[in-house]
Image (cartoon, rainbow, N blue to C red):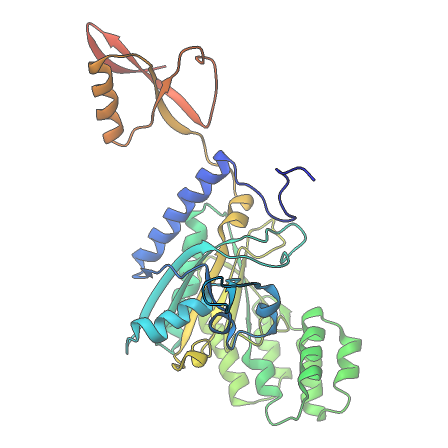
Length: 382
């Protein structure tokens, strides 16, 4: 095998795309900062028990593991930054009130999350801790939409669900872990025959409610139908009411519901959302409420947030125009060097053309040039 061949689902990022990703990273972190979110930078690797405690089997399978040559202990390369941010909130900051944190960094997956996905996503996210009210859910959803707006995603749509619906319906019912996992899988796949088999020994009201969930997807009318066919439990009513309140804060946004979409059911504790581009099949951002995320670190604080992969986001939007630049000659001239330094100090891109390379093109669009006029170096449009 050639030395330059990379592992499957791992790729270099070349200049134009890399610039787009970096500019977008700055734009999105600035958007989060405008909401009052503070930037944190968790490490890429940690002791395995810290990285995976309470994270569930799915994250364990996605985590690369290695031995620390200094201590001999097992380390893990993070597959998700959210548990790390929860640890920072719980142990390093340890604030009593609301804490807003954001982050951006690479994560590594043992397997790609989708057929064309990278195993090295660049994960950007924002988390709010310490507020149990719906206001926090609304804030993170609004922030996620504003981040996609900053990325120039046109007319995004929001898909909503709530993890409490199934949990409420199964409350007090004895279901083995394997059966529970199969139930959630059948619901997510909308596999009614399998669901009928799995629920045959459950109480009839519970069974009928779970079977009804498979059909509860579509526009806002889904919530009205859900109130009719699901069990009139307080937690069910509260979840449906919260979803109604969420969409009331999304004027002009196309919203759909899929009440059987239970991805991340072991993680989310309330409303969850996925945001899509009009022509996309994969979500550009996912988030919601996950109040149990800090429990394993000794602080079971209310929490809500979202995350996205900047690489996938850049691939889903139009490329940015080439960076405007000034072309300058390469010459040993103190006045020329001084003029170039002044321009660069102002934030201009000045590309010096090396001898013999006048006709080459690169990432920059030189729409101006630095020329000598009457002994002075001036910028002139090309």
